Image (cartoon, rainbow, N blue to C red; front, side):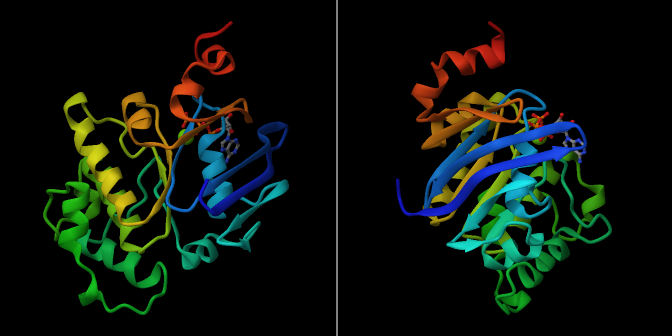
Amino acid sequence: MNEPILSVNGVTKRFGGLVALRDVSFEVGKGEVVGLMGPNGAGKTTLLNVIAGEYAPDAGGITFKGCDITGCPPHRACHLGMARTYQIPQPFVTLTVRENLMVSAVFGRQLKRSTTEIDYGKIFDLVNFSEKMDTPAGDLPILSLKKLELARALARNPELILLDEVAAGITEVEIPQVLATLREIRNMGITIVIIEHIMKVLVNVVDKIVVIDKGMKIAEGPPAVVMNDCKVMEAYFGA
Ligand SMILES: Nc1ncnc2c1ncn2[C@@H]1O[C@H](COP(=O)(O)OP(=O)(O)OP(=O)(O)O)[C@@H](O)[C@H]1O
Ligand SMILES: [Mg+2]
C-alpha cells in the first residue's frame, strides 16, 4: 500500500443503545480507490460521517495526512483537503448551480482562490453535468443533484474525496460514464473512498474493498478476494 493518507483506528460510534460502528479500523493509501460495502443499515454512512467530522466517535480515532482530526468539526477536515458528498444531496437550494460551486471553491479549502480561477466547465465535463449554470439547485432533478454534489466536492480542490452512493439511481448504460469519471478523478491524484451498491462500479475501479456488517468490519482486500469471502456472502444472502 502507498503511504496512508487516512487511518481509521478502532472507531466505535453509538446512537443511544445502538452500536452503529464497533471497533472499525482500516487504512487508505495515498492515490488509492477504496470501496466501502455492506448491507443497508450496516454503518457505512455513519463511518463517512465520523471520518468527515460530522460525528465524534465514542472510541477510536481518525488520522488524515498525519493529523489527528478525531472529534474535530467538519470544516477542519475540509480545510486540510477532505471533501465529501452526501447520500441525500445537500446543495444550497436557493443558490444557482454556479453559486453552489463558488461557495465550495471559495470557502471549502480556503485556498484564497478567486471565483474567476475556478474552471467550472472542466468540473462539469468531468461529472457529465448538462444543466444550465444559472438554474437554482432546488429546481434540479435528482440525478443532476447527484452530479452537482460531486461537482461541489471537486470544487473544494480535495486530496481525499468521500463519495456516498453518487451513482445510486443511474441506469446500466450510464455505468461506463461513472467509471470514466471516477478514473479521471483518480488520475488527478485524488484519493477516493466510495460507498457503492452497484457491484459493476465497485469491482471495476477500486483497489480494495472494506466490508461492514452490523457496524463491524467483516472483510478487507482486493475485490476478487472479498467477493468470494463466505462472511461477506452470508451478510448479503444469509447462512
Ligand atoms: N443520527 C442517527 N441517529 C440514530 N441512529 C442512526 C443515526 N444515523 C444512523 N443511525 C442508525 O445507524 C445504523 C447505520 O446507519 P447508516 O446510515 O450508517 O447505514 P448505511 O450502511 O449507510 O445504510 P444504507 O446502505 O441504507 O445507506 C442504522 O441502524 C441507522 O438507523
Ligand atoms: Mg448510507
